[in-house]
Length: 144
Image 1 (cartoon, rainbow, N blue to C red):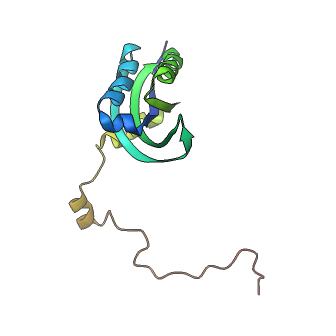
Image 2: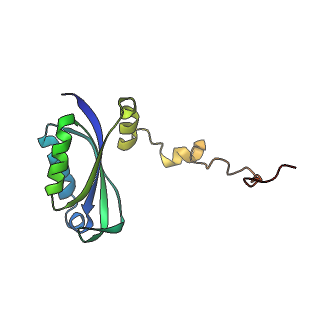
Image 3: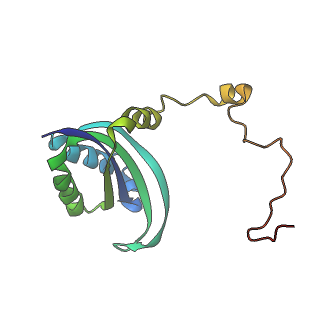
């Protein structure tokens, strides 16, 4: 069976995550490694109010994980996450092989430019910030 790189987005119960911030991410990583997977990057993404309650929860914590695993292990990962009380939802996507390195570099922070350096190089500037606004003709306007 072939090993692929996957992106997993896990939605945690915010109350359980707030009580112990290492247990739920550790549980996800253990699920992956128990099925002979390798966690490459595991990090907090964001906490936000949910659009609708999930299992009675109105807030959720999103955790992003990039990992290598056998393709047949993904269904088992889904099943184990469904059985966990702290994991409300999960989404696992296979990353195209040509995008693996750039995505992993970005997720691990390898390609980030320090803030001071970006300011001096002009890399942090908003494109078109110094340009004057241009008039835009409305769609469907009659040609004169």
